[in-house]
Image (cartoon, rainbow, N blue to C red; front, side):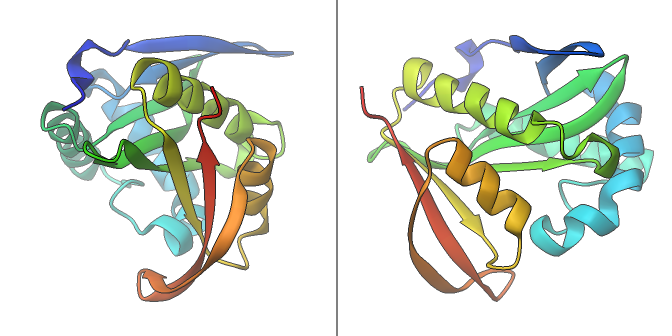
Length: 184
């Protein structure tokens, strides 16, 4: 089993014109920043991700963080946040880790005012590097609803190849399967 507790709490920052954006493993200290991001993003994120990873109250944010920390402790997955000036800009997740086949899902979302700046691609590249170099995974899968054009572009930018349509895969709706494989 992959020991997720030894993975870094911070990944290399993303350098932007507004300054560096840090990539931090989700923790209790992010409660209010995540809540604010959730409030700004719920209508933008909920259709694709549901509301569990986009909390809109401090209590739901704390519950989300506790669940994410438990997921890391049990080897299920890990979550990182994009943080700039103590503001959460979005989230990247590696979860559904299959420890035998060394595969996992990759998910991501951004608050609306952070979209269109390359940040989703940047966090996914950072998580891809973590998955393939430190977790020794062979494959990351992204399940994306066919009309989520922005997420399809991100998957393609990070090297994802469309493998097919999975019927009723995301909240009972169809999803395209994009896979990124470790070529090294």
